[in-house]
Length: 465
Image 1: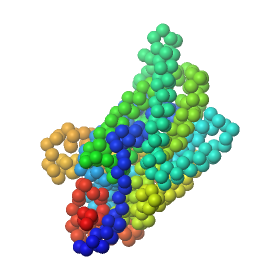
Image 2 (image 1 turned 180 degrees about the vertical axis):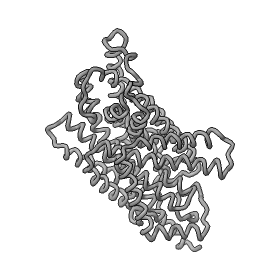
Image 3 (image 1 turned 90 degrees about the horizontal axis):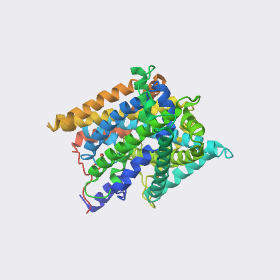
Image 4 (image 1 turned 90 degrees about the vertical axis):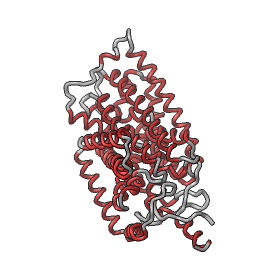
């Protein structure tokens, strides 16, 4: 092959800059989930679970942690941008990979909308002089800037947002323990972990909403092509498991203390339950909570979700499962500008959904569908194809993850399930009517191109001349 042909092929498959270290990935995972996420979803999880919020979190966390272990396994053999999409592409045809990517894209897009709306709501509670829509405009402007400039800007901001969230959580935990600890009017032992109104259906419904607070951890895997070092897949897996474990402990502790403080209170609006609890129990923390939650969710959380959606769209377009425009990189900043603009437009459009419980259910549907495929991918790749004898890592853990995820899906809001299925049908139509996707499928099958774990899924390229 001539040098000019090799150059054309390298241009056809653009690559991202490798600038992210393990601490960057860990911080990105924490910011994607958000240490203060337990505050924003507290009211919905508590009400849906019949008051058994801790058990709901444990059930949801079980599915998330098992899936995180599967992400770690798959990242070691598929260190490329695209996460669920890439892992499914490793095991099945382009069609199955597209559906996996399309499902998880629903999670990224709507979670970005959800965090932006919540951020504006909290900031408006603290500073009502500024209209809520102006906060949203500010969030979207920052998303545009950070998306264009890339992680040189956003990782620095991530560290600042994470420090503010962890600082607030530490203060809240300390004051809540002082207020509810031994010798006070309330003892932590008075909370009923399994109230009488908590049924199995209620627990699964609560778990489906509790999962939302963990969502974003999987976005770490979309950054694989920007990770430094010789083993990016290993770093992706380590950062994923570590960030989920850290957030699990923090979310359970925060939810437990909020439940203690909420005893005897009337909380009419689940979207602001945590704020209302602090107004009545710890008034000095109410405004700081609103400010920290507003900035962390509106800027940090939405930015992380938007980044995941952008990288996934970039990967799918590069493999010709979507129109090729989003696969083009900006010459100045070497970032996927068109993918960023397209995903941002969808995020802005979906803020019109004003039913938070349905929106959260849709987010769970997209994420859990993707998680299901990741767990199955571990069994197919390691257990069946490689005949692995690692029964715990490659058989028991992923199969248990499949069972838990299916149980949680059964508890999702029925309307959200219907809308989620509609999203999948629309994706099916896009796939079948997009000529590029069909050409990519024929090319992969006809030429017999083998999967190379050191390169992104899609057309393989020769080494540089």
